[in-house]
Amino acid sequence: MYRLALRQLGGDAHAAEEVVHEAWIRGAERMATFRGDAALRTWLCGFVIRVAHEAIRQMGRDTAMETPDPPAEDRRLTGVFDRVDLERAIGALAPGFRQVLVLHDIEGYTHEEIAGLLDIVPGTSKSQLARARAALRLALTGGAHA
Amino acid sequence: MPEDNPFAQLPRDADPPPALKTRVMADLRRRGLIRSVWLPRVLALAAGLALFAAGTWVGARDAGPPAGQQFALLLYEPASFDTTRPHDELAAEYGAWAQSLGTRFVAGDALGDQRVLGGTVGSEVPTGYFIVRASSWEEAMSIAAACPHLRHGGTVAVQAIMT
Image (cartoon, rainbow over all chains, first blue to last red; front, side):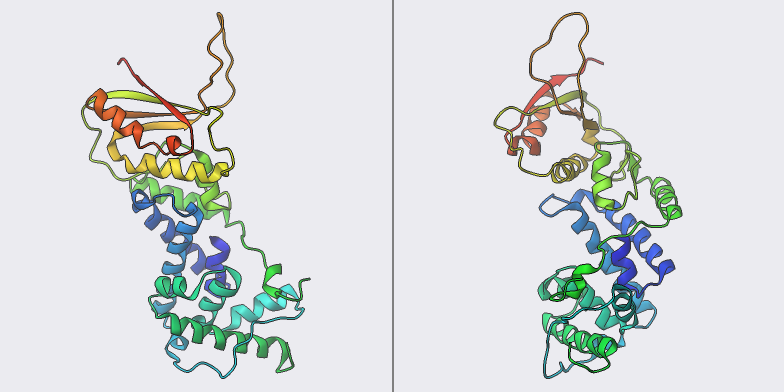
């Protein structure tokens, strides 16, 4: 949960602590609604994602989420990259890109799930992911093939 | 280092700052959201990061216990019990069920090794228990019938607590 919050917030440790704290409170308040049809950790991570999304919006950092047009090509990132460089590049992405990339490519959420969590449509999630991948590829390779 | 998926090398979890655990626990207590309950493992699992290992869990805010008698639900795992499900998942499911009982839930926990004095007891050993409050045997049996332990092939013995 903490790592997820940290990645969603681009490595901002203080903000990540606040998000995890608030996520626990919300989870505790709604515990009676947990029916066990998903792992409890998955259920709680939903609160982390929503609270992190709210925090990003409040910080006014999610302008990238409004970008409508996907790039012409969407390719999953492949290649060999240093882990530290990769984390740094993810952290430097625009928040709207980063949220979707972390949820889809690292955490394994579907576009439909992301749409539900971030209150967007699946098409926006796909568009954001394509742009995030392109931006990450550019940051890691400087435009070389990856 | 994986070439096909560079994200696979990234760790999925991280230990939170120790002060965070203290702060969150204090806040949950202050808000009346913690009660002593079933399964430290629920939280150990949920936290995925040992955020709470204190053996307490979070409960709904209650107006106070309802009137009624207490009953013990003793959980057994006969040969029919499904042992393939990870214990953590069961713990989460049982914990959530306990929470759904609201004020009818009193306590619960897993049971470990048993040692006997003064003779012998049956070969079946309970592996967990819940204590619930109910207004009648019928209500107690109704509560027990919904216990997720039954869905996994377990048996539940209901016994009145004489208080």
